[in-house]
Image 1: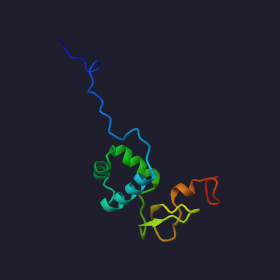
Image 2: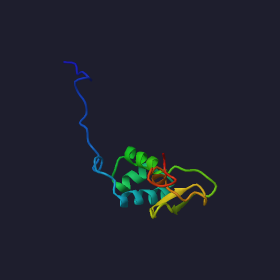
Image 3: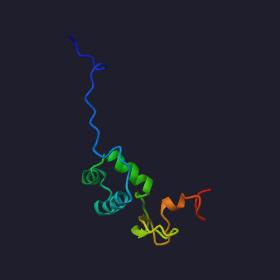
Image 4: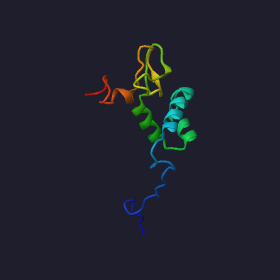
Length: 109
């Protein structure tokens, strides 16, 4: 009897937190770990307990992969947001979440 690859597949093992929503504390921890590890997605995934894909996707959404002259973790000044985000230089003080908020004066239209 020959085994057909179409009939057999390995059991799918879902990462422990793959379907759980991200909390604000987890997003803040991701931001801090991204800075500490220099953006090592696999190391962050192991520390947080989520898949590397989930980490990469959330990091992209949070705008963590930035380049610039003075990249630092800065506090957002957008309407009392106060979240820390990676800013490319000292002139960028509004995080991507606040920039996308259409209810704020500088938000997306």
